Length: 247
Ligand code: ZN
Image (cartoon, rainbow, N blue to C red; front, side, top):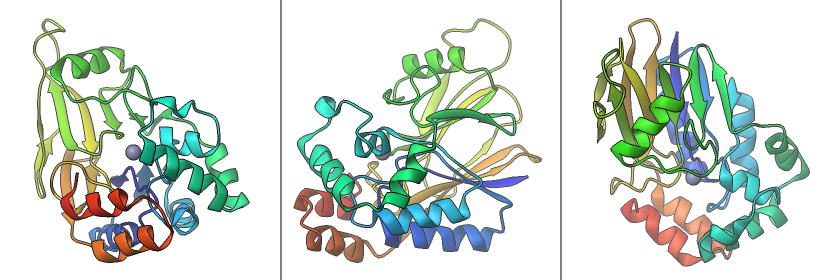
């Protein structure tokens, strides 16, 4: 089975539509979403509708939980808090109902799916080897997909041998191909709607569960349209500006 993995859409409709177009061209059989459908951007309802219609499975992320009032937002930045409040006021009852039915972690088709990490599916940013090793230790499945950091990356550790001290990882740009045939893996597809690795293009991951490969994709989208919608909605201008630079 070939799967498109999407994460951190963050109410960015131009980015989501563009990624779905690329996904359609790739001809995958399933779409999985790792959460944070809303928050930051200006189109929560349209994005949630598309995700609901198109994805076979979708997790809930910390921003979705914040919008539902189910997460303490004191650790959020001021702009993130502001965007969560705006989304809670603007989102339709249908959007909120869909999000309320989601969970932050699950096993699906033999793959571990987590919004953030295997040991903390809601909050942990997996960016270091130590965090990756802890995540690989905590994971039940050999391969885990994680989102949350908005950075396209992977960590892997060979099977067998000592458990700690053998993982490595790297950021992964457009076209990077992983052979995931053996070993333990944590793979982050990056963010559809708010990339933070300096590449403003929307990210997604193509997973092949027969060939056991994972390929990272980045697609250019209409950043100006997404930024314009954020400004028109009265959301913080910094949320529009960061899309231009992918930070
Ligand atoms: Zn996010």
